[in-house]
Image (cartoon, rainbow, N blue to C red):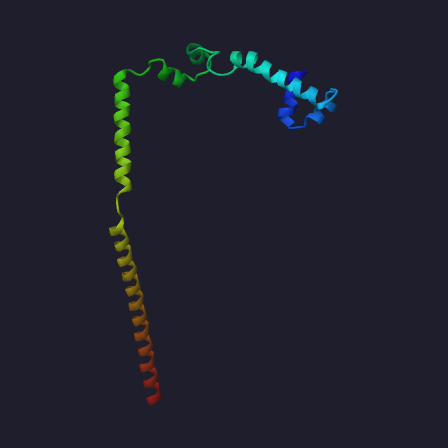
Amino acid sequence: MAVGCLRTKLRLGLSNNVLATLFSFSNKRTVGRILESARQALVEDFVPKHLGFGHISRKEILQNHTRPLAKHLLTGGLARHDISKMRRLSTSYMEFLKDASSIQYDDDDNDDDDNDDDDNNDDDNDDDDNDDDDNDMDDDEETHDQT
C-alpha cells in the first residue's frame, strides 16, 4: 500500500491531504510517514538489486543486452593493429573535411558573371537586328510613296 501511495504521489503530484482521502488515511502526517517509509525501503532494497551497474556483471551485459556488432567489437573482435588503422583513417578523413571546408569558390562565381554578360550582349544584338528590319520596312514605305 505504501509503494502504491508513493507512486501515486510521484505520478500525479497530489497533495498529502488528497492522498489521505484517496487511500483512507487519518491525516496528511500519516501520509508523510508512509511516503518516507516507502522511499527508504526502495532505496535500501530495490535500488541496489535492480538499478545501476552494481547489480550486473560485464559478462552478463555482453551476453544478454548487446547487439552482435557491439559484441564483436567489445569482445576483442578487432585486433590491436585494426584499431590503429581505424584511428588513422578517422584522422585522414577529418583532415580531408578540414581541407575541403577551406576551399574558396571565388573563381567559379566570376565565370558565371562573365557568361551572364555574354547573354546580355546577345540580346542587344538581337535588338539591333530588329532595328534593321524596321529600317528596311521604312525604306519600302518610302518607295511606295514615290510611285
